[in-house]
Image 1: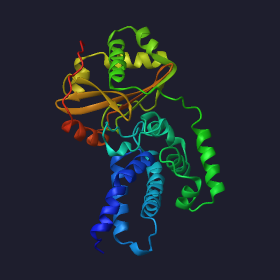
Image 2: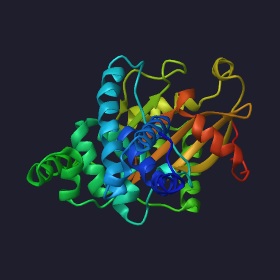
Image 3: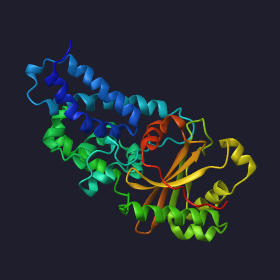
Image 4: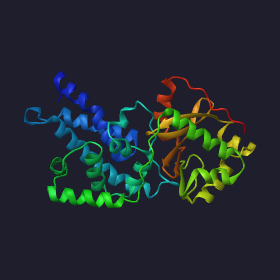
Length: 314
């Protein structure tokens, strides 16, 4: 059934919010786009005269689609090669959604998206809608078809699961570049203690190659172990360059609101390295090298203002 111009306009006004919700729920921009498109298809065939509040209707449909995708995604990740990490997005991307509060910005950080993988599907929905979009428990209960008391219980459970997380330090572009430059200098110094100084004692390094690029099967945990791993990773060798094509060009940027390092090889993004920074130092390093999860970032990078590469002496 074709929809009228008014119905299309209603949906397009909601698209950005729907994409931001779906990205936080799924951790994948491509999956989020698919979920939003499926929501539009259902909107096309809906009885619009019976829909009292389009925003609530669209949110409920999208959420249920995401719940189904989360269930199937968990099954797929059991056979995923190596570690699974979210898809990074750069500033200006609609997937980032609202950023007026610290909670909204935190909810889309790479660290929080990774941490939310430990939540059940319903816990993730309740946490995202409550923390990032300010929905009331009554509204969320309506979306999930549960009681308000049950919704509050799910929310408390989600908060407990995430309680171990430490609030990251918010930085602007200049501060982000300084953090990236300090990290690079330490990683290339050849002195492990220089990197250890920048890391928290329980720092963790995770990488996602999707079975296409090299990645470790498990995280590296602990400042000293992470430092040793990173020194080996950033130590140049002909063998390493042959794996990726040639010596990479490095850029400083911001991804998901946090300092990030972009590795470019022959005009393509080979990896995005994101840094979770707390008051005690760099607590987590997430390296996304799966080509399928870099397509959106690469597209946005190609149309953005050209940046000066970081000066690096290998």
